[in-house]
Length: 375
Image 1 (cartoon, rainbow, N blue to C red):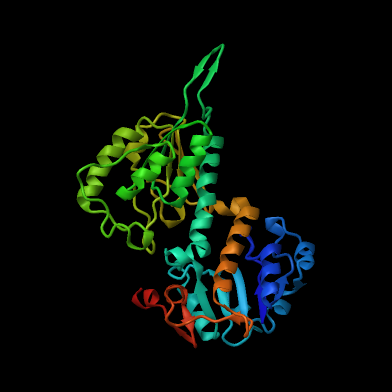
Image 2 (cartoon, rainbow, N blue to C red):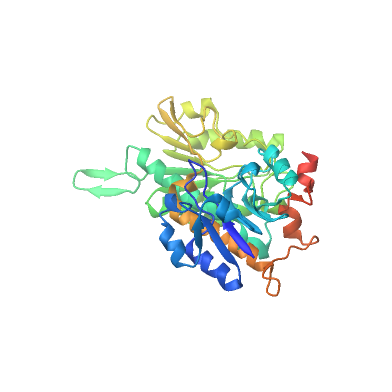
């Protein structure tokens, strides 16, 4: 079976394969064809892919007869001509926002699999692209904040006096938030964090940060469902806003990471709260592309409100292209290899498997995912 790896459009630095995964696919018995230049933005020259055993060529060459297509972002359905009928497309397809493309895959006879809908279960952890990319984003958010902040992060004792450590507050303790806490601690900051899920309190403490939690009020509705946060009750939202208002005024850096799958990002910080912060403070909003956790956030831009810089972070994993590509590519390999049939030398995806049911969008010329049917 032939696996095609596509070059991403302008602005996307990541690649869906690396030489390591190419070698592993070939070891399974597959042929790998890569569109020329696919790895350039991730510092992977074509020669490295060729040395790993892949064939390089045009998109048409790569797709001709391909049974599996690997991509970071969902490609235009019209550009997938030449692949096998029923070829499997694997990548981050953004199903809810790119519904027209999903319908196009169905019409084209493509079986589309959205890796960002991978269920949060033990056997799928190594396949979870959201976790691998969020981990890098959480790290880079702190680095971006440190670069924009006009002061040092660690406490420094000098002959000229002592510099106090920066105070960093992380809102939302998922994968990105935990990495942000760890990175800020490594840089010497005084770190605190909050989340609507009470189970994260111990995780915050384990990293040496101070948990800031609303007490004696029920947290999120459906806490822990699938490992994701859901919406908060009105009572909790009010109590949290009061707690955060008092805490945020004392912070130098705030990093927000709260996302609810399929819905706009929850508003965590208001303009009035920003006004209480010291001029020169920095907020990094990792939910900017989903509408933002911070009032006034603009995705992909830096704005200043009340003397506070707000960084509307836009897919920070892209700025770490080599590492992001490596993790993404391994996620894809881990998924496909888990369903690989040695005799047929191709992945076999059972209809009744919970992973397959969660991520399969189209099959047999139809849109088959329940989440899309309900949307």
